[in-house]
Amino acid sequence: MDVLKAMLRQPAALFGFIVVVTVVAMAIAAPLIAPYSPDNQMFDGLTLEGAPMPPSGQFLLGTDTLGRDLFSRMLFGARTSLVIGLVANGIAVAIGLFIGILSGYLRGIVGGLLMRFTDLMMAFPALLLAIVLAALLRPSLWIVAMVIALVNWVQVARIVYTETRGLVERDFILAERSLGAGHLRILFMHILPHLIPTAIVWGTLGIATTVLLEATLSFLGIGVQPPQPSWGNIIFESQSYFQAAPWLVFFPGAIILLTALSFNLVGDALRDILDPTQRGRG
Amino acid sequence: MVLLVLRRLVQTALILLGVAAITFLLLYALPADPARMIAGRSATAQTVANIRRELGLDQPLLVQFWAYLQGIAHGDLGRSYAQKTDVGSLIAARIPATLVLMAAGILLEVVLGLTFGIIAALRRGGVIDRAVMMASFIGVSAPQFVVALLLLYVFAVTLGWFPMSGFGTPAHVVLPAMTLGILGAGWYARMVRSAMIDVLNQDYVRTARAKGLSSARIILRHALPNAMLPIIAMIGIDIGQFMGGVVVVEAVYGWPGIGQLAWQAIQQVDIPIIMGVTLVSALAIVLGNLVADTIAPLIDPRIRAR
Image (cartoon, rainbow over all chains, first blue to last red):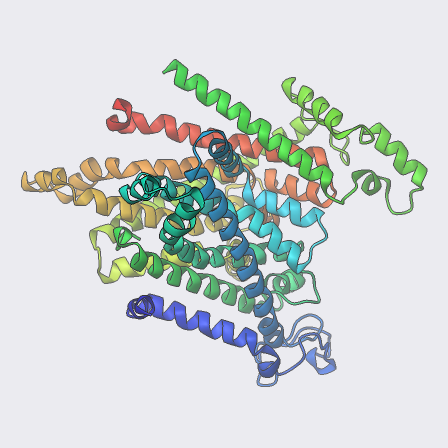
């Protein structure tokens, strides 16, 4: 609670927090708020020439190339982005924590091997890997989430590794060990609690990365597949039309930016608060 | 020193071997079947089987991987399934365009990042600092493809200053480089700012000020070189990332670089090209880090002493 209060005192973080809460609320309440069904290809949603309609009182953000209401599609797209953001990033943080703790705590062959594996993953061109995997697997919401998790855990693992190494050297761990505590007790009761701030910070910052990556994959046509709306695939579907109907790119683009920005602002503020040594260094 | 270099070389070779093994495994474990892809929709089972045999895809996985490694040892990255040509020369043909975009993008990132990072550090806590930090946050949060389309809409479609897509004249490189540069500058500005703030608090900077040196001289001569290390590390990372092809930017602007080659190959399940590009990218990432690590001690004697 104190953390929340401290965070909301900063204007930037407050802004981010409000946006995050709003986007989450709108995603949850999408069926209640949406003026139309996101899949409804409306006859009056196209001009007489069959072109998409610009924003108006009837269609708040205009319509897409199939005469569907853009605002409604974006509301349901928020669900897709946030579900992937939470699931993919949750898995990535979990894998990162697991591998980072083990490789930091276990010396010798296992720890060394795990860290070499992480180094190896660092040398992988991440976006390329994600694109290859997403394209060659049959893309669906869960596949996309898995692919993103597989690519994004590496950074968390590295940071957790470094922190764990530092913690293992500390006196209270030595004291605990000399009192006869087992490995599991030390790991779960003493090391893990110290890593929770890191997990929270990366759990937040990572959502921004994940939302961006999902949008990128969907924009390339290998993410979430239409007709299920996602912010990225709305732009993918109307890309060739964007000179005539730029709103089809700009509204979803703006909401992707705003969401990623807000998670970044909140995550950064959390890092400042939870890790005083980083304060004010940006 | 020699030992250190040798160790790094062995490490590099091992990392590349690992990347090759994982990519190979992934590509062959995935459900996409290149033989069926090449044969086309209406091919008979016999045709597909023939193609599979021709490409060696009917061999056990380990045999295939061993053959691939032998090829690499001879500098042979294999032959493209779809284009029937040597993967090595296909990639080599894309390198000039990739290098041009990489150089322009990194130059823009560094110039913008240094300028705004230094200004923010000097005006720490002020309005300008906050504005720069906010802008850099927007830069790191903006989706590349949206910015690419936005720049395209404003500068190519509406104003007509730059061509929509393609490669060849200096005008072609402006928009793709701006997309990379503006977004990347966000990271650089944050990094430069935090490094500069650290350095500006050091005693020797105060001493320099007390000696009456001009601000410009203090910043350029005393502070900046000491703040350069993280920036060089970052450029190393960027060289690696950009060599791997900036798939999205190249796709939007029709830029004929390695990323475009990869993207076409992915759509055609052209595994040899995908393997080749992944390896070249991984090599670039490792080499980028290596270059950064080599330059660091030249700039910072403290690292040399270690």
